[in-house]
Length: 195
Image (tube, rainbow, N blue to C red; front, side, top):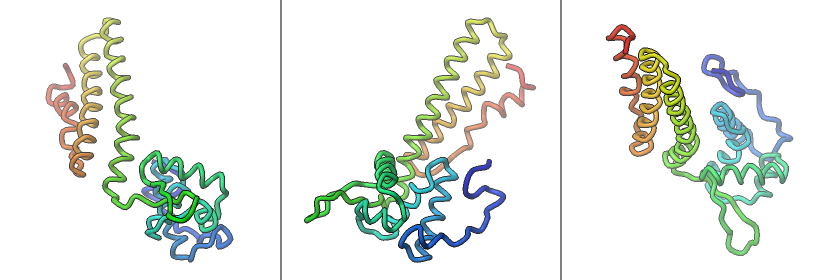
């Protein structure tokens, strides 16, 4: 699996962040960039990770202007980033007493934050996959596809259902149990791959 930032087999050592790109001390810049790399690896924007990491590290609400200055980002970029992060529920917008500007703070319950993102993103993805497989099953049955091939399609659909169940259990318990996920394929092996 290759992605921008780190990969599983080849995690390069990052160069020191450019000091002109923001007002962060080196340790904070390295931390926010490391979080940005992780976030980017999982398909989000690098700077989304940097914004959340800075808010989390500081432990206080910050204005958009402060985020711009500290991270060396434009006003438009910060606006777009915090809007996306709010939608995912990982950054909260609040009013600071005595100021007219919105401020942002990080969600600090990491399990709740990850669960919310997984539920929204991966849950929607798996639901789309299941719907596509249901439609494929319907079309295959109407097209008179043979029993063996229909059985293989059923096993693929069972894998998607197992993934959806594992995701629901994870979101409820924060424990990931994949033991039942490949049952459909193990069962097919014991019958010689026939249905």
